[in-house]
Image: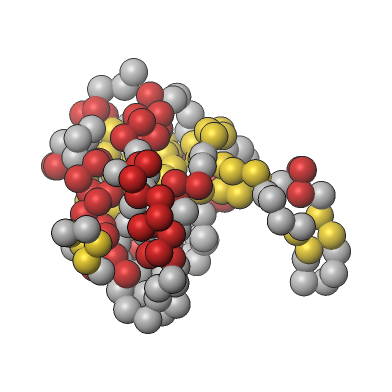
Length: 200
């Protein structure tokens, strides 16, 4: 297992909340802002000086990629960096520990696709061959920072794709779950309410 001094974390809490109609990361949920549910778990595993909260410690970017770059710029150099979204507050300590303990340059949780998948051009995909990527994720800090420093990746929705396109490094998969549900719309808070007892 890696020393936690060699692991850093970036908590992404800098989004504008367009679809949520307000900045969801600051919505009060069971006594504290949404981002703090993630933050408090991360601090049980990683020292505060190795954690950057984008949107609190440093400003968020215009895109997700911009926010990640701002976080990387503020984070002390480390061997591995975790990217954790404030919008997935049901993440468990065990899942965060899996990211810390599993050796890989690109590491992500995945879940099966249960719906039929169709492309906009009306091409159908075999859902048994597809997976949903979920965060949190973990990366080789130096590789991720160097890839973003090229300036080629300014609006990416997932950093596993950055490492794949820059270095040809495919992600290593960990089994995810419905607790990694992402809060996107106001109605999603009802899902948290109905499931939080299992994960908080």
